[in-house]
Length: 303
Image (cartoon, rainbow, N blue to C red; front, side, top):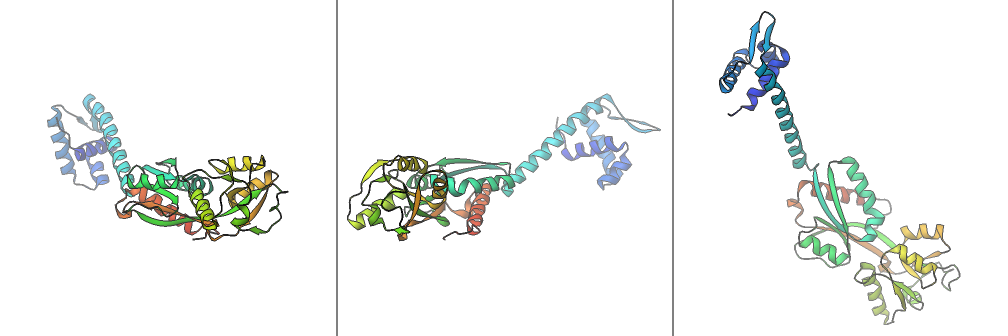
């Protein structure tokens, strides 16, 4: 038994308006066309749907049952059409985002909040990774969008500027460099340093700077993340390199000072990588546009 959706819509209209004439006026269709559709529907069901009286059309028991199912079916179809349209317009779906921890804490968390406020039907699966792993994940299609630092980019990926931050040196107030307005890395390298995680963007910058100086680093300990750096510096295990964004909070809540690192590489440029932007799923493309627009309007962005 097959049902024509248009006939079901007209059937519901007849039931709700109580007459073929009023339903035809509402649906902008000839009454004869509706009457023919109702006759065909009755033939399909092999039962009468209406009883005609001086009060108009009255529903039979079969019609009452059909009306309940037809309304449910038409509502499901309407919701299906709406959801598929949302997918086509990029307002429903899942986005796989891989990013470095530093960008998640400083920028991405807020960017995601604003984006999901506008598109609550979307879901973002966020994974923190080191920059090389971020690029690899996008290249291997285990991530849709990557936010990374450094110069390692796989062939075939498109790269866009995202945000920038500036590194400062945090240390106890009585440290020999604590009263300097700014310091060069060669001065910092004379003291024990709380080292960044191996494989991180910051670690690559520090190792390159040390190699340029031809000066061995005094790495007292290595940690992952800037909160552990703060703890190690408070424990006087060395000085630490952190972004200004973090240093402002640390200095205000702990006996620490922050000194500007006077090196070109102290300004770190973060980037976004994707596969071919033109072929991205609509939700991913929508989020990419949001990230780029958000970065462009961010006060103090170095890019």
